[in-house]
Length: 604
Image 1: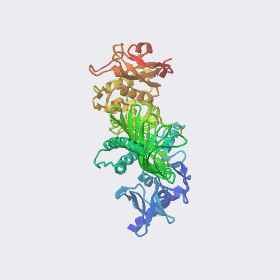
Image 2 (image 1 turned 120 degrees about the vertical axis):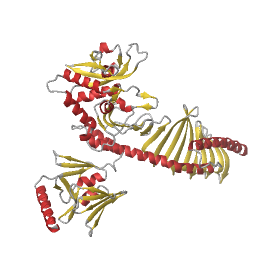
Image 3 (image 1 turned 90 degrees about the horizontal axis):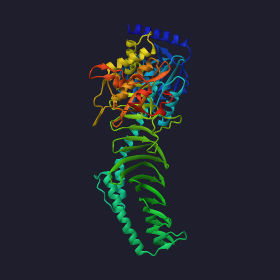
């Protein structure tokens, strides 16, 4: 019986392969590069199978074959994929996975299902029906800048953004910066050990259990005291030697060359206290300048090992620990900054290779903000994590360069796991993006916001309606289904999700920008031109107690009117108020203020 079933299976596979041979060739690309196959792919039951080496090796998997068990295995790092031939089950890290189609052997070659293998490595696979092609996005080896360029090109091409692909790309950026952060923080353990060794070179013993910041201040105070004592002693013991350029040297000579412990004073300013040999810095030495000093070891006049640095700043001071190799910065550097009242400000981490900054700078502020940027604290922010745990990934230009203005197509993940992918204007969501529920691993088909919006439109909108009818239907639906969040900014309880269309539509709770964003989201669905407007409002009209506010500008019969959905929702009396519905700017100006220049194209 088993033999009969086996023969039948072979016949079915042969029929499938024969059918596939009659189809047009399928083009497969990996990270936008077309892949060349020695043997063509085949389609079985709607799934593409390819030779095992063709897919395993480009994805970094080492291929092995067990002839006795007829099993193909791909392995790399912590990932192991085991695929028995003609079995509808495979193993991924020991976990059994049911396959749509099994791995099989065709013309003495092992064929495996492409999508299963690629997705098991974390790659994203997309079938393009119009071109009969498959694209694989494998992000592991792509730099953050390269991913940003890909996102920019995707967002700005004629087809518009492919959100499932872009979402995966943003996840890769986030994973990379979190790995970077872990590397930075883990290195602090070694940094403390090296700092203790550096301190011992000048006679200071730092306890291993002392907090890093205390180590830094203790080291700084010790060295400043030591500098004064050594300078005084060396000046008293040595007759100064004046060089032709006016520099002064207090120390010994050996064969007419500076040698041993000495004090060197530059005419232009600045001082050296430490070891010299053959007219070069050799050994441990301090470089003292007007606003601070550096202390490190030199070998043949080149800095090596860990450098301790103290610098006075305009409004405070900073410590910096930097590694050097043959005079070039090398490895992870850590800076700690304080204000003039000795209050902690931030930690900053950098990484250098051959004296050049590589990777992103990581800065953590006392308020809890975390920034990953390209070296300038006030711009080029790539990723920001705010104190509540929200993660922002910045928009970029064609070269992958971001800016702290945060305007354009970007990413936001709320602390509760909800994700927003879409356009921003100076950190404000424009409401035309897409939301994903926490841990939603699927594409747009499972996007809760998209589903719910479609259901609402189907329920309340008809073909016979005018634009004005649609605007009112959506307005009233939202007013009846959203509750104003009574306390969105209570101390330590800032509910960010209340400021989003997700909070308004999914949770049914929102504040002004959540109301307005939900209104825009549904208006966009039915094709009515509209824009969010941000400004201030005061019901009394005197603006002494004005608060930040958001509402909508909606185009009806060629004219933009103001609509304040938040003020229309009277939850207390369970009624809809139309006092601020479809009004012109002259009316709204009594209670709402906005920057005219930002909306001039709508309110001419």
